[in-house]
Image 1 (cartoon, helix red, strand yellow):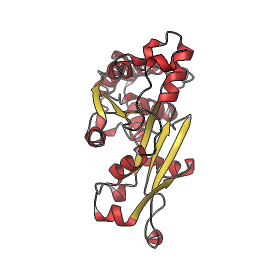
Image 2 (cartoon, rainbow, N blue to C red; image 1 turned 45 degrees about the horizontal axis):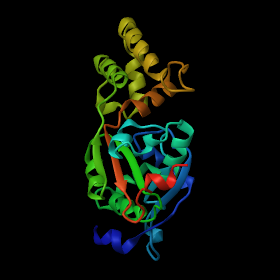
Image 3 (cartoon, one colour; image 1 turned 60 degrees about the vertical axis):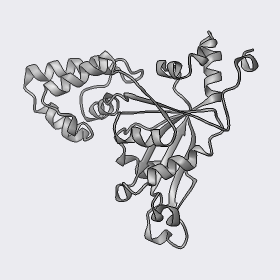
Length: 251
């Protein structure tokens, strides 16, 4: 951690509006739901007038209902509950999901994200904290913080849609800019446009409540928020709160 971070910054409880302030800097634009905790990095007094508030934000939420890699990472601990409702109750009591870490771009590469992650992990009362991300530099940050990395292969439906975008001349470098991608889609000739539309429709159909979205910028924005599959599943085990023995929590 740099001297700047240690001397000038502090981690405090945040609000949803703090997340919204920095949301535009994250590659996923859909909002996390079922929130548990939000924390932010801000400047300490007397430096507050020189820095934005927030400088960074982290969002924890209720864990995803079922995840194959979670079962692999926990030696099928949660599969001891055969009924979905009972199993999810146990998951919710023992796992939290780290949904977002966002840093104001003006403060990248000085240790802000690592500082925020380390400080807020200390505040988690559950045995397990999990997250997912594309395998890149962020995976290394999580591993340094004590997370264990598990690789997740890209599902076929993701790969098919990704390949369709590439074949249509829409490279990965612009997948984070919905307006540019939409312009590329609109400029396609009739046959490539129809082929891409077919693949996008098939892909989006797998997401409940979004299967009937019409072509356009809103659909493209939703597509791009989902298309980058998180190949890294990462799990942190809380040294101060281990998973309860099965015999104590099975009813």
